[in-house]
Length: 132
Image 1: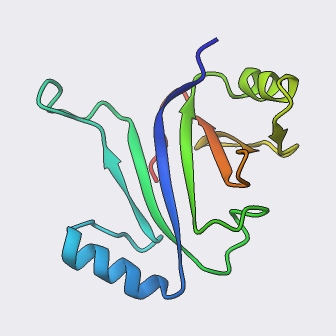
Image 2: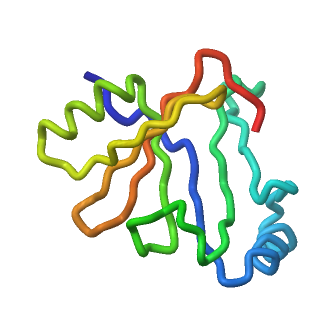
């Protein structure tokens, strides 16, 4: 079974989200949108036209509960091919897997904790990508 296929997103908590967004916009040129982040379209010299895939980068407020139960100020979202199969395998391997799975037009989302207590988000993209 194929497990992680790429990075779907990077999420960072900030004490001052607006300052962080402005800093990343000004100093690193990240086009931070009104929703709090940006979606980097996938392309490279061999594929100059984006293929529809994206990696999301977003700032969250420091008091956001979205990363809970992790206390880390970041969370990485990994792309997966078959979320339900991977979650079942992780449970069978004794990993701490969240019972909740979210399914929407943006795909399927599940979560697992790593050995140091960091919440890891697993994302199976939809068949045709939704706009962020």
